[in-house]
Amino acid sequence: MSLSRLYQGCEALWRDVKYAVMARNYARVRELSALLHQARGDEQALRTWLYRLKCVEQEPVTLPALRNTAYHLLGYWKDRLPPHERQRLAQRAFDHPAGVIAELGDRVRREGPTYLATSYAFRDEAWNEAEFRHQGGLYRIIVDAEEALAAGDPTKLSVRIESLGDASDRAT
Image (tube, rainbow, N blue to C red; front, side, top):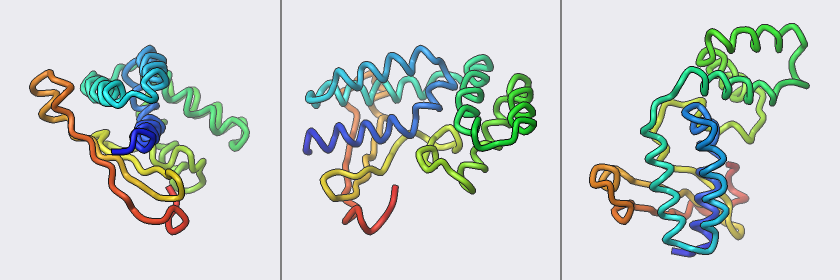
């Protein structure tokens, strides 16, 4: 497996899970971001980072962290929504942050921004895969951590990177 392709895959997965991580604990966002940057160029460190990410996925979503995530996501629409709509969503985020996040997910699917279209914050799925471009090709990273998590052993983590063809054929 190409080390640079593995790193790009980890970055793509991070792009897609960052807000789902934030919904658990904002400190985890800073921690995982720093660890990913430090792991660049080291396959074992990248695999350990993936294992750590999958451990965080098992942590519960908390109401304060969910509120924080809703407010962060609202920031993408501060210039796109009329003031009364932003205010409505900001007020609703305190009592019903999951509802606000779901509403923003609907907006993302309709209007963008495309950066958020693949975010796990808007889908109830395991954080197992992400698509990315690398040197003109389109790829998918697939992470299976079931055995690793059950054993508490990061070396049992399975990572595959599949080619999806020419990047010009599809958009991520």
